[in-house]
Amino acid sequence: MAHVITRPCCNDGSCVSVCPVNCIHPTPDEPEFLTAEQLYIDPETCIDCGACIDECPVEAIFPDDQLDEKDEPYLQINADYYKDHDVDGGLVPPKKAPPMPADKELHVAIVGAGPAALYAADTLVKKAQVTVDVFDRLPTPHGLVRFGVAPDHAPTKLVERGYLSTANKKNFNYFLNCEVGKDITHDELMERYHAVVYAVGAATDRRLDIPGEELPGSISATEFVAWYNGHPDFVDLDVDLSSERAVVVGNGNVALDVARILVTDPDVLAKTDISEHALAKLRESNINEVVILGRRGIAQGAYTNSEFLALGDVEGVDVIIEPDELTLDPESEAAGDDIDSTIGTKIRLAQEFADRPTTDGNKRIVFRFLSSPLELEGDGKVTSMTVSRNEFADGGSVTRTGETYDIETGLVLRSIGYKGHAEAVPDLPFDDARGVVPNDDGRVLHGDDPMTGVYVTGWIKRGATGGIGRNRLCGEETAEAVIADFIDEKLAEPTASRDEVEKLVVDRGVNLIDLEGWKRIDAAEKAAGRESGRPRVKFTDLAALEAAAESAE
Image (cartoon, rainbow, N blue to C red; front, side):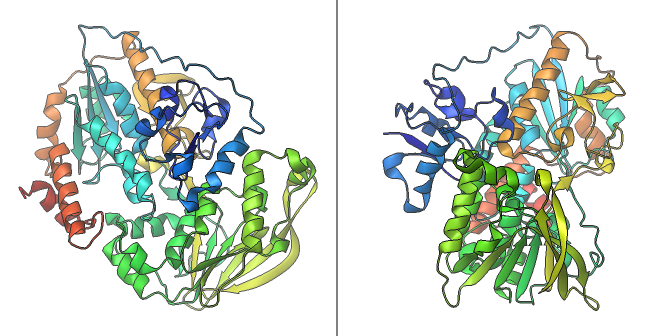
């Protein structure tokens, strides 16, 4: 019997270190780990020990004889990876942590409370001499796990259990509802901590830069996701669901998420932690078709195969791919049977969708490849989109054919990527072109020189690439840089005490929320959820969140 990794895989690599026969790949030491859609178990090497099952934070691993029918394709997906990847078995050597000076303390402030921040914190708090204070402007932690993961992907959110384990350490503290740059400055943190780590993400969406983009009815997928996930900043977002068709521009996982949410039965969503205001609006929605536009071909789809496969499991929804949409780029065409296994699986799944019969009365998700938006039109709101047909040129580049077509739509969601912005880190150097803070393994660079005691992790460090697993590796790398610099005595001693921080911000009117306050919010949301058969009902009003944090109930 072999074990199989399925869709919820978070790529954090925790299963790799416990596997005694090195049958899970790519490992964090392999280059493909940084870009892999998921991790894969070699069915020929797996010895059925079950260690990976116990370690998996999102419960994505199962024995091959215990798979649900919808997960059975992962047998082939796991096996396919090893058709073109030669790996060596054997024990995985454990990482040896560098020794810390026993007579010195290290105080670290982390700005941001998302996955990259908490993975960095997890590495740091394993050292008894280290104290970590995590700051976030919102009353709740966990960043994109809370506000980015789709509500119908509950298993992915199980990583929060690991974050709670980190937060429960005695040398960890939350300073939530406290905005760095407003309630406390960068310089004030530098005076009180040996190191300050920025993990503020990349929250700005990329623009289409086409005429009509500013019309009502044209919004970013970033905003839409935050709206249905209950982010307090987006409760009042104007989402017009009155038309029968929506168009999503882009073909990454977020594009698939928003398309799926738009056509999923609201009664199904009512069993998730989707925000109450979004659920109410979706119940009144007229949308019965979502068109997903991809500038390039099927082989270049940026979504993972697991998310693509999962679309076929949405009840009452047909996935429509016309056979003539499956044009391959010259390189993929020439590769034939030797094509990369991940791309080959993507093509195979698309062909299977193309061959499926449709059902009268079903809603539809329609894929159109080699298509780019040219203009949005409408009188006071979006009513249609003009689209260019593209083609592959020599070398695999994409050019316009000159052929266009129109799509009637009242809702356009752009989902073409995220980008960091300088306003999130006003006291740090910033590379506008890449949307990141210049750094070397997390050490912030001013020119060619590292800034003493200032670090970054997550998307603001490397750009908006990779998910939860990549953030774990990224956070660990930055934390290890902080520890190494501390051991090498490269960090300046604080000139003021970190013990002053709480009084400093409270005296400025901050309604500070600590770990216990967050636990009370968490308990109150889950209690509200139990009353309606849901995992939680998110509080979206800041006053309600603050009240829940202070409640004794």
